[in-house]
Length: 269
Image 1 (spheres, rainbow, N blue to C red):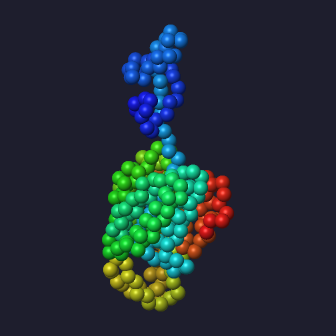
Image 2: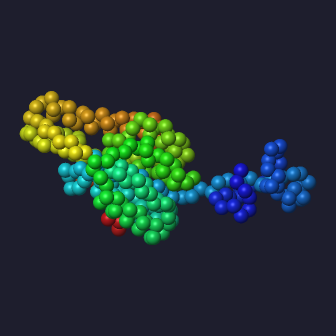
Image 3: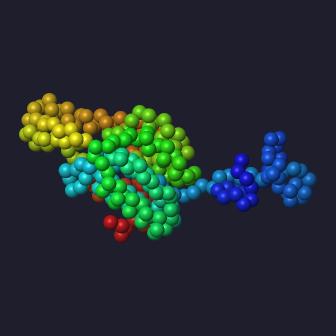
């Protein structure tokens, strides 16, 4: 049990009758003297209201055919959530992963705290390396370290690198925190492009696909749908909410379930 009195991160909850094994350093001597029965103080860990954003900078995020890249839409969504959380008095932190990004911003409050998050989003997006990939599970130790009791966690990713090893630690976090996944997607991942031959490049690997071939056209959206369904099913299994966000979607409308905590959402771009 945390130390009483001057210790940070604990709140006094109540005094109760002393039980064998209670720490005598937490004895409530005043109540003991008044009641004639030994009482001890009970403390609980202070729950810090806040938001931790975990943003994916893997190569798959640097893609988009409708208005903007998935990485840009993820940054816009993260910025909106950060501003609204700060407006509600919450602290905001950030973890970046993928694309060689291993940075983090410790949770901070007020305008200064949210600006640190926004600067990191800008700098990490510019610095991400399309040839370097990492998985969700590789980011979990840093997420666990920054996620304080009472904080919410929002993961922004296209789910391409949601590996099997990530679900157990994420389930543990979901058992103690409100956790949500914003799953980025592009229109080209939902339906194939018009028939024709297209040159594609990913992670330095180049290939040409013939979308005039019926088999290629049928297999293309199925691959992405299977990946999204796997992420959705695993998330639901462990109690994590999933919201799909298109690159051309209206943020306020799509993210409305996550914005409910904020009293005012108007006036935020």
